[in-house]
Each structure stands twice: as structure tokens, then as C-alpha cells.
Image (cartoon, rainbow, N blue to C red; front, side, top):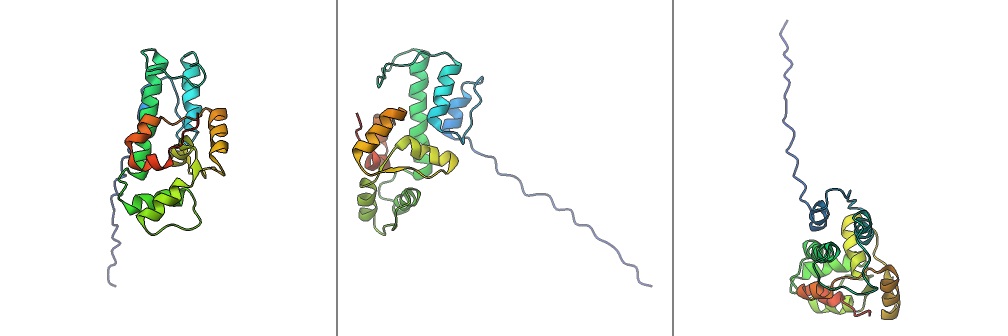
Length: 181
């Protein structure tokens, strides 16, 4: 009777890719007492951070680059949001793929085929940029507004202001930037 051998092949599991930390995760990690939730709205997370550290609220709509802990944190928060946008969407205004990715996230009915068409389509969309950064963390659809006035009212009500200076540093962001104050 022939002998039968069972052969076991042990395969080493594929190494897991190390999850790279987002700029927002790095920012919030600088405050070890705070438990950051990357799927929660980033503005709510920042507000919770301020409450945890008992930082007084800034005057409505006012931000002065000062040396208070809240001012320093706010500057870091703004930078992290801008860097997150660049990581997700890129900042090369001549890259059609970047534009088409942005158009998909904005759920445009038709994804334009040329750079110029993408830029024109994005200019006609009114969205809150902080909500767009939130999309990167939680995938929730980004609310579109019919007019600049509606966007401005929403932005003021929610206090979800994206740093204008940071937006102007990134090519794609400039096309979405709206002056709401």
C-alpha cells in the first residue's frame, strides 16, 4: 500500500501596510488627553478639543494670530485641514485626474473630460470646504448649496471656516474658495 503524505504549507501572512497618519490625526495627537475620532466632523472635534482644554472662545468670526494656546492650536488645525485636502485631491491644477476625482466627490452629474470643463464645473459648485475635508474622513456626501448666499449662511451658522490663506496656497482649492463674510 503506497504511503501518502500530507504536506502542510504554512504561508506567512502578507505584511500589513502601516496606516499612515493623516495630518489631522497628527495635529490632534499633539493633544494626548484628547481622543480624536477621524470619522466625526473635524470642526466638532476641534470644538471638543477647545472645551477639553478650557480655551475661551474667540470673538465671533475673529482670529488673530496670537500666542494663546487656542490661537496656536487653531493655526495648526487650519494647516492640517489644508494639508489633508492636498493629500486627498492633490494640488496640481494641470492634472486632469485630480480634477476628475474632485468632480466625483462633488457628485457632478457628468464628469468633465477636459481640464477646462472640470475647472468650470467646480467653479459653479458651492460647498463648504470643511465639509469636503470631512468627506476624506467619513465618506459622507458633501452638501451642495444653490447659491453663495446659502453657503455663506450655512458657514456662518456652523462656523466651519476654511483658512483662506491656506486655500490660496493650493491650486485646486482656489477654484472652490468663496468669500462668505
